[in-house]
Amino acid sequence: MIMALVRATLARSHLPSACRLPTLFFRRQMSETPQLTASISRLRQSGLLKTQGLIGGKWVDAYDGKTIEVQNPATGELIASVPCMGKTEAADAISSAYSTFSSWSKLTANDRSKRLRKWYDLLLSHKDDLALLITLEQGKPLKEALTEVIYGANFIEFFAEEAKRIYGDIIPPTLNDRRLLVFKQPVGVVGAITPWNFPLAMITRKVGPALASGCTLVIKPSELTPLTALAAAELALQAGIPPGALNVVLGNASEIGDALLESTQVRKLTFTGSTAVGKKLMSGSANTVKKVSLELGGNAPCIVFDDADIDVAVKGTLAAKFRNSGQTCVCANRILVQEGIYEKFADAFSKAVQNLQVGNGLEDGVAQGPLINEAAIEKVERLIKDATSKGANVMFGGKRHSLGMTFYEPTVIGNVNNEMLLCREEVFGPVAPLLRFKTEEEAIHMANDTNAGLAAYIFTQSMPRSWRVSEALEYGLVGVNEGSISTEVAPFGGVKQSGLGREGSKYGIDEYLEVKYVCFGNIKEL
Ligand code: NAP
Image: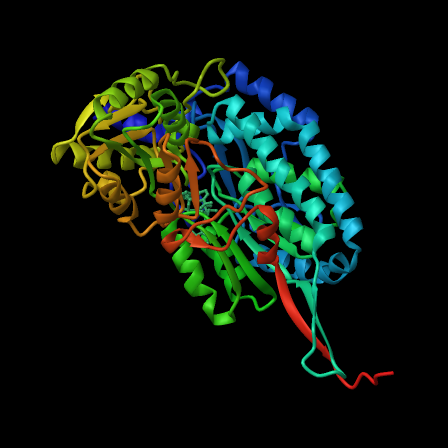
């Protein structure tokens, strides 16, 4: 009982729409470790440990002085305190983005492109510090954090280039004295709300195309991981993104969200996060008829057919399942294995999972960091309990890790079926449920039997089957013999209740553009 209390207190609390209580008793008793002291000092020296919001180019505190503590999920240590802002600060950020829109959108595409390119260069030249920040506040291993920095920065580079390719059209007229033109123009002020699982990349995927097209933004990062967003914003200022074009407010999520939704100056809302919050924001956008892009939760099937190359399937499934300790929207949530290969795959996969080293992401060799907070670990426990009570069996792992905090053992569970909660909800943790199927038709039916439709994976050596199945899957992204498929050059987004719109690629910029048709009449012909 006492241990449970200690654990719950040490692990980060999660009160989503309000500022968290300022202090946790047990953490206060702990002195800062030398590792954290050294990290903080390094980040201070680089100028990237920003602890205020950014409004109109000025670093500001919450107007009432309230703060939120940002903690390291691996240790429970306090990294920094940031402002807990609300409606008033959000309103000022919106005004600032609105007044900057006319000047930013009028710069030439070339000018905007150069500034974005400079930002990309700065992100890369500070990649190690940014990765350190991500690991400290989010928990993913440093190597994975570095991959996120490069992936995140790539969106800025890609859209710096794309800024120069926002072409319109000339349409052959239906009357001889007319000329019909199509212009593409920036939407206006964009509200961007992002989650904690990719503290940098979920922001750059939105900010890159928005700024490239001439929009200005108010960003609200997750209260759990605001420091990376603030560091990236500092580098944007250094790159010449003008004050007011990019504002960052953090704190009370529902107050800031409401301010963005209610404002007629905000013309677009772009959100990445849970389906439940996405639905609220979608309905809240109706009153002002905003354009909306939503990147919501997934329930990814990973289908391993009898004819798969087992090594490729194990490696791919491992990547699709355990990246970020299972905390990504494209993580394999259900691993469907054909009966002829089931035992062999289950055995090889469990062995590979046993090699995943769990620990503080700052330590060498660690492949699995902690979960983000106590609520996340309780969800994992609830879903495993439901599955085992209905006949599933834990093949490996299945409990909290001896390291304590929110570390959880990488887990493989067999004999799972599609009706268990583990397959109906997004587990968002290091749990790999294995389901058996007989035929291709059955696998497709099981895979599509969900309201989500973000990512799916298939492993097979049959070319006709890979075509057939990828066409039949009701998903926005399909990996064939590959478990790691996200890239800035390809469109990312879901169908069904996984979202609206696409991020990345040439399609991603359309979300920030309005199409305007202009008809020139009475052209006197020669
Ligand atoms: P979340 O709870 O929905 O939070 C996402 C963001 O919304 C955070 O900034 C949060 O603020 C904010 N928020 C919460 N309530 C709000 C409200 N009433 N009004 C306005 N903003 C509000 O999701 P999460 O737990 O951070 O992220 C995990 C989820 O994101 C998973 O479902 C995952 O699948 C999904 N995801 C999807 C994609 C994709 O591309 N499809 C990518 C990554 C993650 P606070 O954190 O400050 O409370």
